[in-house]
Image (cartoon, rainbow, N blue to C red; front, side):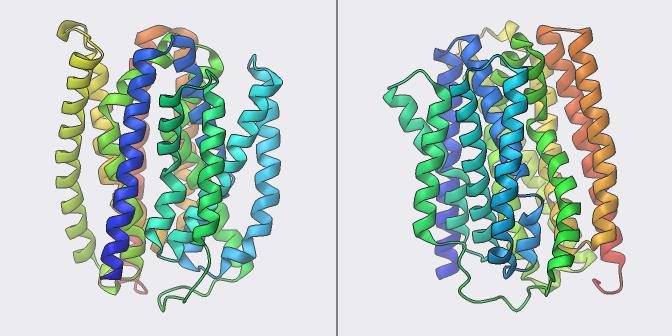
Length: 401
């Protein structure tokens, strides 16, 4: 009963975060200038991209052995501060930002990194609602600040929301270990470092796959492409991506605690269910998005960018079915297999980013947004194929079957 309440509470918090961000981005699209929308997209993608990077691949390692939560924390703090400082310095030199905006970027990255660590630690301890609070409830606070409208500095909203969420998460103590699960692995510090490097490469490629296009577009300065892509992404994809995200969040602890999952029967059964879920999920999300575009943003039917809607819907579907095999690889893959997957992910991510940069140099505006959406779809398709191949190889191993 306690587990069901925990799961329902975590889903409720996730839903509040989903709804909050949906309202936020619709309000921003409707009420803010193109420059403000572009700044919002850049700040969000920068903080999430670099803040997630500060975890340095330890999220999955902690899930395998929660005893490493305290052991790794001091290293995490030092690394997070170093990464945040030099990332902020680089952005300050490239972008025309004031020292105040640069400070907010630094604080946003640091605070998001700490929230991410607390969320990963809570998830490793199977404290799902506490993990979700650290990971998503800051969105609700941003919504409150946005509705209060006490400042035009969007960056400040992020920093305040992160700080309040982190403070409350500290009192919830989700990262504290109460009892070790019988299914945890005994991972040494050296083994943890090796696994984390593989997970780090995979994490970096995932972050760039999710947030990389807005980061690169805004570094380049194509405001029209950024706003157009952001507008459609904000209304067409959030329902599906949020439900996909919760599914992935829930499946990790569930699979690792279920011995029967180590079989082709269990894997194939789960894949079929996730395929059906993703089809329905994508159709609902795209349908609701089109209605928002027509009736809230008041874009006429003939002016809708159906090409971009179709491309984003395909991306959402691929990201949905990708969940199962990526979770299996993350949980059961050994160091060699993880590095192999990371190597292929790295190659395709580099090719993807190079293609995005070339598209920005050759084209501009709405057409660039459309091209980048297709490049993103190809990148996600490559991730799905690679992880599916390796998930099946892992299940073929005698020690797993």
